[in-house]
Length: 245
Image (cartoon, rainbow, N blue to C red):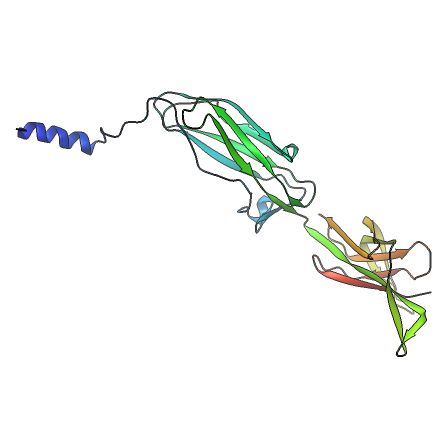
């Protein structure tokens, strides 16, 4: 038969959590199953579900010791196909019971695309001695120029109009410091070239940059077509039509 004093003692132990002790061995708890950098704000280098090329945003994994004995983290590394784009730093190698350590992972993309690597955390944890967390961020350029270059061909007319044909080998340049000249044709001239890409066999071009263009300039190295300036609208497809000389 339980006395009133014994019943009170049991109630006090239950109220104080005495029946929910931590495991005797170190246990690692982590707050993220995947790092994709998708929640970053624009001023931190992100937008939507991607980050900008040329930035170096940081994602953090929180590690907690859920055991009574010290958790010792012996190694933190990044492995995998795109591991060179990531750098991982550990805040502390020793984590006492209930305390925390943090792993900061810097992603430094140099081109657009989706990248894959694995964060590897080695410790004396009983549950996850070799913890692996996937890294799968997506990067995109601040500004993207893409489109097709076609030319008017004076030798062929269809229904009284000029025919157009896809032009390969046309140099398309991102231009800055542009002005419109007050001449008969109100021509455009630009002083600075940011980048240049050449159209392929399908006459298309695609180029990313962290610098916005004021205009796109198309130049034919064979001098068959006149140099042409076109407006710039980031991310939108554009068709540049060059006139036959």
